[in-house]
Length: 215
Image 1 (cartoon, one colour):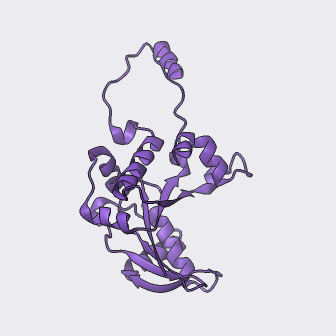
Image 2 (cartoon, rainbow, N blue to C red):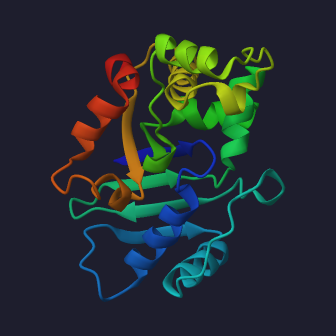
Image 3 (cartoon, rainbow, N blue to C red):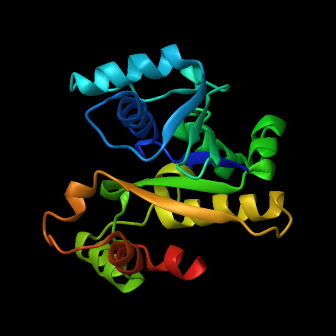
């Protein structure tokens, strides 16, 4: 029984770092990983990423010109289930482009339509409090400044709005078919600095309540 998972996220979400860590984990004898490598395409690219991660070198953020569109890895579980992860290692800008232009490539649409599950990455440091309209108006009045009408959706639209819209694209592409989605919060140490007992579910419901309610 094969299971296909598709990985996505906005710029700086930690997708590439995850791939580097995953590759190291399944190839290192120092970890008791429950998933074992079954088959890999383009392993050299992942090996290079993994080595930089092990050496604590900064990983280059994936940009559109350096995307790896054919990355997939098959992992075998103890019950012999094969999990096929379709990266492809696309830049967050590519997903954000879909949000702004409201269009998607046929290849990417096919990945999403045939996936059994989606891993959606969110960097905890990108989750910002939006605040109330009244608070922003008070700030404008205090500074005696006119509100700017120039808007860049990529910069000015809240993270939750962009994620929800991308999830709606997924729902439309899959024509209402049940879609299993897991959210991966990267850089979790940032989230628990102020509260060591914070859990991902609590962080999700309190700091991303709009997305929480949508899900």
